Amino acid sequence: MKKRNIPVTIPVLILLSGCMLLQTACRKDLLNQDPTTELATAQFWKTEADATYALMGAYASIRPCFDRDYYFDGQGEYVRTRNANNSTTSGNLRLGDAYNNANYNPSGYGGSFDKMFRYLYGGVNRANYVIDNVTTMLQTASPSSVANLETIIGEARLLRGLCYFKLISMWGDVPYIGHTVANDVNEANAEIGEAPRTPIGQVKDSIIADFTYAYDKLPLKASALGRTAKPAALALRGKVYLYWASWKKNGWDELDGFTKNASEATAAYTAAAADFKKVANDFGLTLYKGGDPGEIDTLGKADKLPNYYHLFTPKANGDPEMLMVFTHGGTGTSQGEELMRDFAGRSHEGSQCWVSPRFELADRYQLLSTGDFAPKLVGLNPTTVTDARTRANSAVNPASYAGRDYRMKASIMWDYEVSVGMVSLQPTGWVPFIYRTWGTQVNIGGANYITYNTDGINSGYAFRKFVRNYAGQGRGDGDFAWPVIRLADVYLMYAEASNEVSGPLPDAIDLVNKVRRRGNLPALAAGKTASAAAFFDAIEQERIVELVGEGQRSFDLRRWRAIERVWVAPGNGAGVWRQDTWGANQQRYYQNTTFREYQQNYIFRIPPAERDRNPNLTQNAPWR
Image 1 (tube, rainbow, N blue to C red):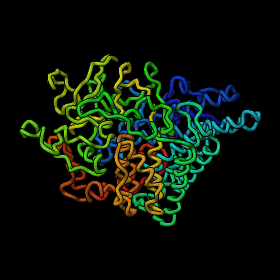
Image 2 (tube, rainbow, N blue to C red):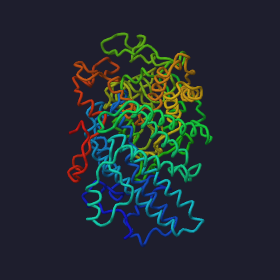
Image 3 (tube, rainbow, N blue to C red):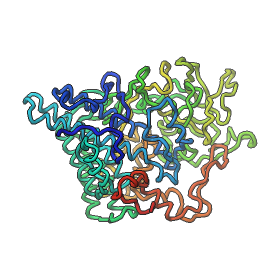
Image 4 (cartoon, helix red, strand yellow):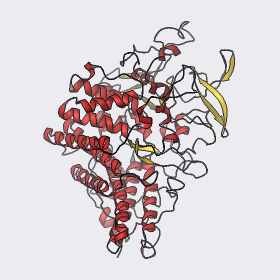
């Protein structure tokens, strides 16, 4: 009996198949196709078009597990997510969003990702369905069809590897399912309902095999926006090696049976560096606009924004920097991205500021003059401190932000910065951001304005990154192609991996400087590359400002075992207060946090409901 996707009614781990995930697709002209898993096998899988049709369904099903990873940044120290459960459960969003009901605060998040776990396995099952059936097609395919069918298998294997990579990054050992689950209910329950957790090393090897196959079979350039090519497969394989190296170097104490191994770490760092170097050098890829910083406007104006800002708008869709993306259809497709809704305030089509910068982020943007950090900003209350708006280094003095990394103006807004307001798909003119004014009439330089209504913000900053500055699309109708991995990240990961093996290398330093150049910063000073430790600090700094809001920081902190370094040690009675630009305490984290709670932040809880169904699905140690 040939296998196909199992019905969603079977009560086992992998049941969230493609038909319960998103049933529309990722891009109007590419992935807007109904799932094929409900079609009888005998009526389908006849032509290359059938195989492509099914692959597009796999992309559509897997996209909702990756295209809102910016919420994970809330688990770090530079981004705040406001009531993230509500932000991903509104009725106008995707049915059963994988990010729902999860915690994106800096602590206590590891026990609330049950839906992500299930949906990732749904993606695995959907990818397996394509792989198995197209492999069968190959047995009788004409020679002219073989290459295209192998490409389709390569893309499906890349998607499967992507799902498993997130699974092991969060949960460690997970059940490995490498084929489509049987259609028969009893057969499926017997197979999946008793599947044990596979050791992480074995799952990692399978992911590497998937990405290697994809690299071998995919074209040099993607055939359409949203599909993948060789550089993406190689970059993702390098990233798996890098994470494995990090775990083997730093340990993963919370994962039963996992041990450090310096030689394994070195081998994995070496393999990662080799993959990243090939991506950087062998495909003719460049950063967006050649890495040129572009133009920047004066303080308080935004007619000219740096190239880094435009990188996160549809202008960059299809750009070589974007190695792999998940596409969105835009207006009228029910497939739009939610970036403006999540990052902007109510003055932008009634958006809701679910994600905003923390006060501490601003200090990470370095000075153009020195290429190093400015004196720390000081929070001052302008209603009680008479010179708060003019005092040097005051966080509410706009002049304090002059002469900094161009990525600052492209990423965040501080007092008296402006953006284009929008209502009912029409522009309403410039709206100035002034913290705590929330849609107030103000006079600036003799002109009257209504201030930016960002009532969900408690830090003193709003994001500009990801917020559209053109009319015609509602808050959830964007068509930006969300980056899964991009070239700047590869440059920084190459620097990190090679630094672990050989210390600062000239080509690694050059790549970090290319990333810095887009911020119009000078090259790294000699002291920043004088040792492996100093260079790592410089790499981490670039990862913070280059990748902010892209869902990388919390995964970096865990693989580096850096939570205690960033916050405080277990049992600290004071914890860490997060403040705003007015100097007020807003939230306190890691106060009297126990060692066990720290452990729970390094590894996620296996969903209890899945363990109830499967007696062989053991629980991670901190959650027992």
